[in-house]
Image 1 (cartoon, rainbow, N blue to C red):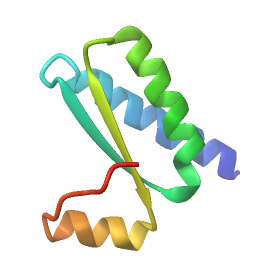
Image 2 (image 1 turned 90 degrees about the vertical axis):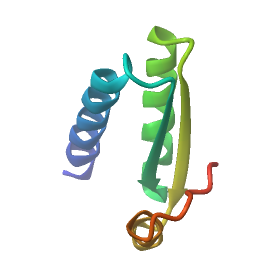
Image 3 (image 1 turned 180 degrees about the vertical axis):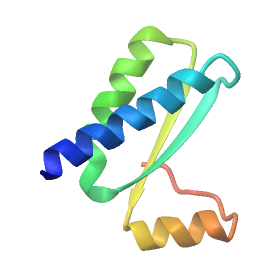
Image 4 (image 1 turned 90 degrees about the horizontal axis):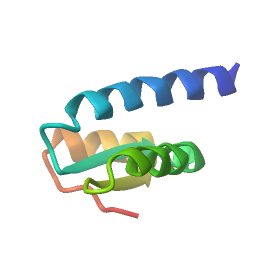
Length: 78
């Protein structure tokens, strides 16, 4: 079940990223630490099709990321 959820989440992220790619040169994606491998794989696939784009990934606990985003604080990239 978790794998299906992770894949669905990844697909949603990909659709959002591909939909916005023509407007932005840099995309910042924040994800829970347990999504590291999945988001890195998505990043690699995305950059294959959009070599001029820059994708920054940030990982951490979902609570920490929520607070950073909610308080409009910069995310630390990994």
